[in-house]
Image (cartoon, rainbow, N blue to C red; front, side, top):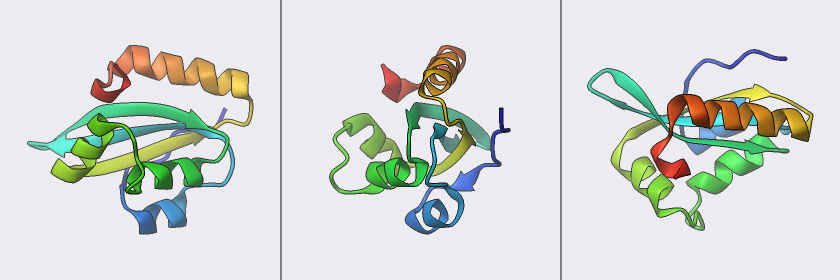
Length: 103
């Protein structure tokens, strides 16, 4: 399996520059008092598209919208082509970080 990327500032330019068009699992984090907190974990068959959807005005999750609006947010991801493996890694990450917006 690939390794997780470094943290990138979560904005449209960085998503287009760094996120791939293939499948994987991603984490959205925010920074507060020099600490990073994971607030959402997701998976997609197209990382760039899904990360851009969260930034769009059509984002339906109020928790994600609030975090993006109120904090400096970051993203990182790992490329995984298999849907079964993406689901497993997503579940492991949710269990590990207990993200606020995955509730």
